Image (cartoon, rainbow, N blue to C red; front, side, top):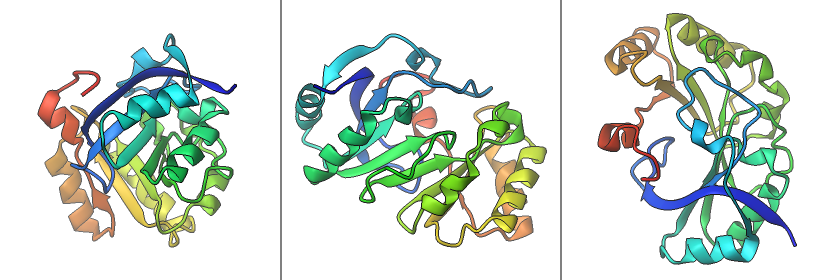
Length: 213
């Protein structure tokens, strides 16, 4: 019987991606092989509770919500995450996956909306980017850059100019919380006329660093 180590399951508003503001059930899996400098979910690196697929699905169902986001940590660090994603799709949820971009996404169910990072220089984990993942993203998926500095912005701009990202549905630029001012990033994007979607972490505006909301 497949089990997953789960840090938390909770109901809140989606704070990131093009689904921002949408009521969503979050399933936060435990564990992550990366240590990004701006990480705000260190509490999900260890611990957690081992749960069966049936237990996870039962807890999700109690919220009577059509949208489920599987996140972490790094959810794909647990192989059984792939099974969970397919099970959720089979039950007709709209399913999104938040992943670091360091692990192979080629086996993720094609019905899942993949929200994948490319780690910028200031993250400290740029070398972990698995660039071959870009070939496994399509018009339903989203590519995210967390911008910590002007250097990060210029690097991210170069990536979308030199890599084939035309098949990807959304390119997201997000200012790192308390490192880059949203107005500053907005100005850079407008000056360069970049066709990207700037996002601000809604959950940070609403609840600060409070967990599980």
